[in-house]
Image (cartoon, rainbow, N blue to C red; front, top):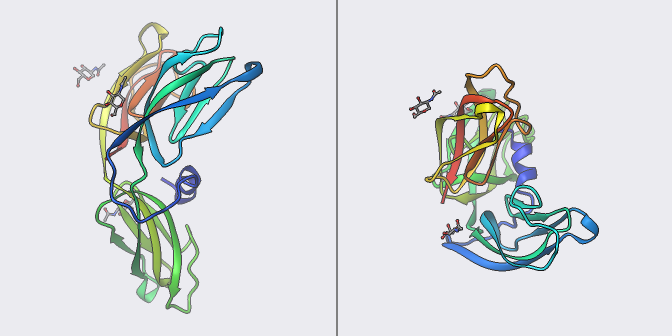
Length: 236
Ligand SMILES: *[C@@H]1O[C@H](CO)[C@@H](O)[C@H](O)[C@H]1NC(C)=O
Ligand SMILES: *[C@@H]1O[C@H](CO)[C@@H](O)[C@H](O)[C@H]1NC(C)=O
Ligand SMILES: *[C@@H]1O[C@H](CO)[C@@H](O)[C@H](O)[C@H]1NC(C)=O
C-alpha cells in the first residue's frame, strides 16, 4: 500500500506511547438530521469492530450498511437514522520509536520493524546523509511485511509510529450468485485493509468499491462479481 494513502487513512490517529489495550465497547449517539449524512469519530479508537442499534430515536429506519455504518474509527449515519449505538472497537495501541535506516552507495535498503502491524507515520528525526530524505521518494514503508525502506543515499534516524499487532494475507473466494449481494467474514481478522482480485471467475465485472469491497473484517460482493481475492488484514 502506498505510504501517502496510509498516512491519510491514519491521520486521525494521535500517536502515543501506549501498551496494546483490549477491545472496548461504548454507547455512542449519532444522528442524521434532515435526512443528511453525518459522521462521528470514536475517540481513542484505532478500528471500530462492530456497531449495533441499542436505542433508536428516529422514525426513519437504521439499517447497517444503508443508513448507518463505520469506516476505520469513524461512525456514520444517513437518511434520517438517529440512535444510540453500541460500538466495540480496538483502542489505540500505537507506539513510536526511533529507527535508523541507511541507504549506502545510493542503494535501496530495508529494515523490518518487529511488532508493527500498520504504519501511521514516518518522519525524519535526524538526517546523516548529504542526500535528501523525502517520503515516498527516498524513504517509506510497506505494511505487507512491517518493513521500512530507504533509497538514493538517504541515511537518517526516523521517528516511526505504528499500531502494534500482526498482519497477514490470504486468498478467499467470494461469490455474488444470481447478482445478489453476499458477504463473507474473516473470523481471524480484526480488520481488513486491502482486497484485490487474484482470479476472477465471473463474466460480470469485479470493481473495487462498486461490486466488491470490505467493512471491518467482512468482505462483500454484488452484481455478479465472483472471484478469488487476495486479502490482507490486521489482527490485534
Ligand atoms: C462486537 O465486537 C466485540 C469485540 O470483538 C465482541 O465481543 C462482540 O461479540 C461483537 N458483537 C457483535 C454483535 O458482533
Ligand atoms: C516487503 O514488501 C515489499 C512490497 O511488496 C517488497 O518490495 C519487499 O521486497 C518486501 N521485503 C521483505 C523483506 O519481505
Ligand atoms: C471456494 O472455496 C471453497 C473453500 O476453499 C471451495 O470449496 C469452493 O469450491 C470454492 N469455490 C469456487 C467457485 O472456487
